[in-house]
Length: 313
Length: 298
Image (cartoon, rainbow over all chains, first blue to last red):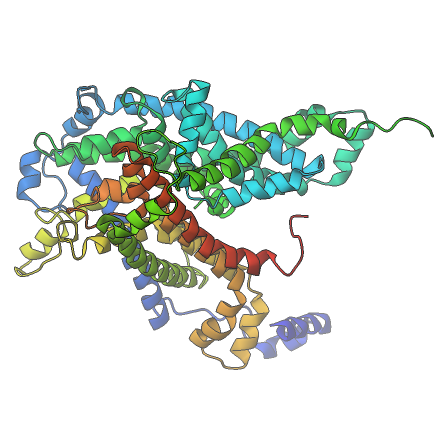
């Protein structure tokens, strides 16, 4: 290709008279239905169907009535569309004695997710900023422990945290859970922000120093406005991560304030009563809706987030 | 100039104050918590942690417990298979997407969306799809294959494969994304050189590209492996450990011992074993990745 480009150049310089000898220029048109393309797109299509099928089955199941589910197969579209399962899942499905549906879990999750996201990002961005621009002795040691800590199975730290929260008097409360999410979000977010702030040109920082700006001044006036994209990436990472959490929710809260995932599991896997598969699927979809919307809206930023946050595992 | 040097402690004071949450998390929760759990795994704590030393008793009991052995066996089968499959499928999908195809973004979006869903949601979806009375088995039977049997969630022998299917559906997209990033990092000239030399495509992938992608492959491997050790919610949602105890996993053993059976010592011992597993996975990687080249974070 490099040689071809060179020839093109000399040709152009030589003038138009030699061009006629060359024949058509540009890439050779490909046949659309080559064997390669059929195999390639065929495979991709089949795999895509496989990935989409579960979502499709969930949607159609949640729109059918129970009699139709008992008769038909899971892949057939609903004959008679009903939104009753959705209403029931949201407003009246029972977990234990509470019969106010998933709405309770939804609002709990909202009340958990918003402060957790704000707090964890606030802490981690300042941490990352200190690590990138205001290194002090020992900072890297703590940072290394933090990153290594990201690989420790949560189960190892579950009980010590119970004790810490109990000592602080916030075991079994939303505050406690928010704190736990902030702690476990810290390794990956700090890494994310540290790497981003390190890439900000040093001159900017130095100029601000010369102008007399201090630690917080530079953070709020220069770093923060310059790094909005990375804040969005961190937000996507945290919203989906915290919304999808189950383990911390079940360990550090009580039934009244269980997050949506825990409540969903209790509704679907409860042993009492007749299984209402349509309600279960509506409830499952409802719980998956928030991260799905975040995913489809954010697009490439989500990919960037997981590439950075892949360490979280 | 004879100005007094400011005390070491107060240099960068604001940065130090701002780092207090990080320092507390690193030292108290991560380091302190881990040491605490390991130490208390040598005690006979039941309902509450008590400092009554019993040596390796908890570990002996652990490895005598049938449920733990099944958990470990499940983790081994699930771990090996999901490592192999997610790496292979993830790579193949990435290679397909890397053929300068149209609608690449659409395909990538479709392959990755399950990763946005929680393990609970994933587990419940597949619990429904694998339901023998309504799901895949009944649909295939209704097509005329009356003898078709596929009920992993109700068959103790194959239940772990039912969980594997769900886990692969959820997680392969992530591996694909990492691999795709790796493939995009390969210099275009390598491909041209291989084409000029007439090396077939699959050979180029196998002998040139994959060895060049080593860092990405190892990163993906470590991410998948550490995720496998933690697998918990998926099992809770999809099978609850059943039928019987056929699909138990170590993380669930830990939770049940600590919070349901009031047997803290067992929980601590089991979680220490989990930690050990992760160390076995991570330390060689960290050594390869960061060792030898000196301090990378320095």
